Image (cartoon, rainbow, N blue to C red; front, side, top):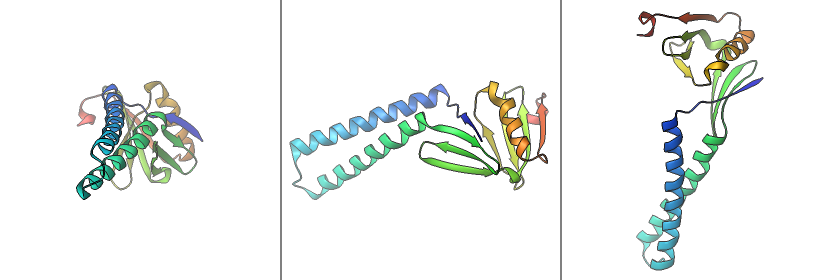
Length: 151
């Protein structure tokens, strides 16, 4: 089993940080409104509950994504963990792996005509590919160096 850290773009990292700050502000604003306006109206109570639930949810999900977003390659599957969210890809269902050298993307193609782009550091590509191929030698691997293959 090997672990590869997920690579977020700078824009996504900034958006996640903005979401964390917005969630903290929503919780603080809701606390302020609860202290100043009280609970006299049913619509206030619903607003408080919704804002607090979304704020706490965002404060759990977004930091977890920043801290623990990884690919875990084991004998049977590749597990993508985005914080508390988990997705698995069975290695036996992978038909081919293609590295698009011009755009520097690593793509897994599955038997059911689906695909996924792997987002790890480019210097980890060869280790990732070697690890996956060691668990299923029937997977085709190729490198695309022309524009034609990337359409």
